[in-house]
Amino acid sequence: MRNKILWSDETKIELFGLNAKRRVWRKPGTAHHLANTIPTVKHGGSIMLWGCFSAGGTGRPVRIEGKMNAAMYRDILDENMLQSALDLRLGRWFIFQQDNDPKHTAKITKKWLRHNSVNVLE
Image (cartoon, helix red, strand yellow):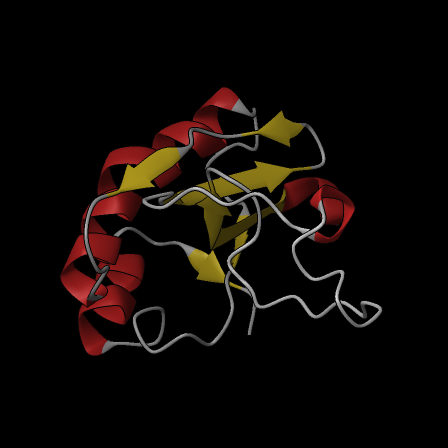
């Protein structure tokens, strides 16, 4: 059964380190010593990617420009998901797994999945 499942998700990749606050303990008067500083990049940046994978490997990664909405998600599925399933030799009757993000459960997405006869793991 798991050989017929295509998983997908989006992820944010930080290009220069982590995008989180870090806390460190320092002895009084040593805050600016080289060993107690963390280098930073002023305008680091990140990229958002959509991807999919199955037991047989990974599908096509897609770089997401801007904020993704349901229409953009539908377009990504239309241009990449079905071809990825074919490339991974899942056949036409695979099961698609996604999380419950609002753009994944939007009417426009559900309509596209039904129209393309994609079985979705609930």
